[in-house]
Length: 186
Length: 317
Image (cartoon, rainbow over all chains, first blue to last red):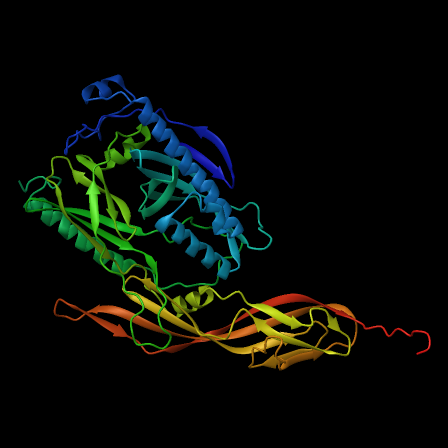
């Protein structure tokens, strides 16, 4: 899924077709899907394929929406240096990390305008937890903490690759932890 | 068994180990020199979630009866408060306990490039009890994961003084305010002032980056008062809260709403603790001496109304 986040506004949504390839349910050594092109009938016929159940699709959609809502809340929190704005969308190590991040920004008298273009996949989901891998283009920039200026600036256009865990807490999907890995070639 | 470097086996294991060592050494040698610069200027680039654990490398090595995942991370770990002036180590990160599992669903089409980057392998989700969370690519057909080893890599070289100076500015301060009596000042009568919400205690914090832990201690050095009418006063005292008579007093000569400003100059010192090889396969903890930091000034301003008392003449008096 590719999503552009500009501050609190999302511009354009291009959802790749969600084609789920079977992982060999119940097997500890699932069939590799690395070489399969899930968009071609030949490829999908070559590997065991499971039709996506509505409930699983619904979960993926739910988690995707929660992940993007988290980014909106995070962008709001680091712009206004207010941890409360993200407390309903993050918990645990992730929330503490954002709290530290905001303290560091405040100590420097700056805030951040988040401009990112997401390209993420929900690679695992159950009723209680989900894993997302997001390789996103970053054009975020620093602003003055009092004036919140500038409103626009040229970003670096660098690519980040984050793996994120979401968990269902009190009925809500929240981001609880994440890690950054070296991004692949653009 | 050892012919295909992607398959579990002795040859494959050796290749991955050597690759891992070379990568680690390259990281050490190629890391840029320490750069703790001035705060970024508005308009300059910003990387979201900068303090997420940074997984520098993940190596999967075949071992007897399974595979071992080596994960190299660099991360900044907030320390826990300690006792000011103590010789105890405030915070040393412990090795985490991790588990690995295969994701339970297939992959969206846009995930295909990542799959093709790791031919013959599948992504396993690794979760550790210290918050670390990442993906490890395990060869298809490999036996179960028998061990997960997380290594904290040195990362970019750190300048402990700069790290301490940065931490110095980040330690949360108590909710300081300006206390005054009377609530509305009276011309020609002394107003009493004091520091509200802070008793002059030493503040402290710590942070761990790789094998280096920095602790800072912060103590107030001076209280500078500006009474909003051009008069200033510098004290070593916090003043005394009403109803006690404060030693910080000021007499206004005209009506105004004065911006009373309190500036506290904090002095600081820091200490560095490192974990180093003892040359015999163990580690030794080296606790450094306390070193001074540049002072830091924080200020708080409160509007303070001052009014003129009017004499009223009444009949017969």
